[in-house]
Image (cartoon, rainbow, N blue to C red; front, side):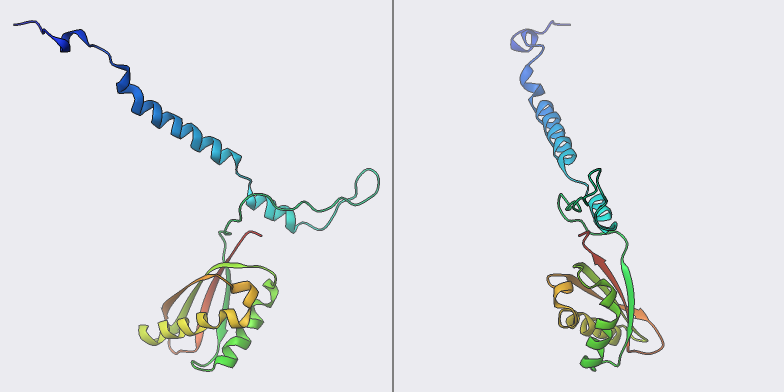
Length: 169
């Protein structure tokens, strides 16, 4: 057996080999710091829903705190359903206004609409028709919302199940 000679025998440890690991560790630390800096928008939304101002020690009401941090999409959807004949745009808009009246003032992030029909084609077409009328029914609520059309098996058409996912505030 011959002993190693030359450069390979002299260099046992090169600090340059650790540069990649150091970079990865620093990136992880920066990511953790950035996540820790974000506000909790769900807690802020829950605090905003609580009734108005609470009195302070001086007897004057304190102003309600405003939400901080980026908006988030709430995990639990609002489920509504409408019944209107396919092609009856006025009735669809009327029904959409009625079922979303309780949620006026909120903004939808995305909407999943399931059109019922025995066949997938007409069911998806009905869901698309309903989604195309959302902004007409409630312009402020559905402005910029993402919509998706789905088919849901059923005996007849003219019925849509709608899942609305709202922003936290």
